[in-house]
Image (cartoon, rainbow, N blue to C red; front, top):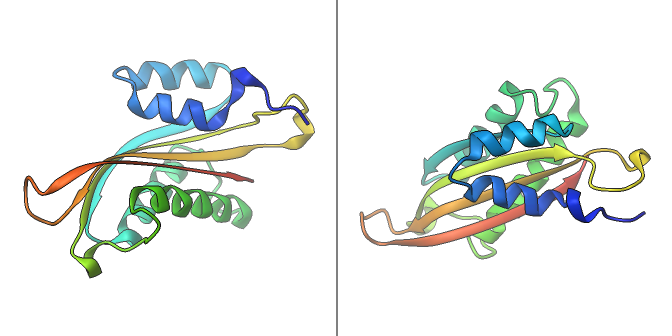
Length: 147
């Protein structure tokens, strides 16, 4: 089971998220057999961040909404990414913080062996801080899970 260097799903998810031409990058990844989406979300509530990412992934056919294991894998990747954004404590409004994030969701097989199946990566980048303009700082998170 060798991880292919050119198919590192986390690296691609972060580069897609940070790209100034993310639509073009996403098109290239899709031509390579991967699926994905990009979007934005801002909230003082973590469940709204989760819902926005899940909705985007379903609407863009990155995951199939009727298959539990796909939603479950996405959920765990989102929570792992939120741990990075929130520095381990997935709390926002209850501790007077808010986030403004861009996100990328990417699905594909990063291994040489196709039998390994698909994995999903969620990358988040933006700001976190007190709900007062100018009281925020940059943050980033990445979550990866098998489907």
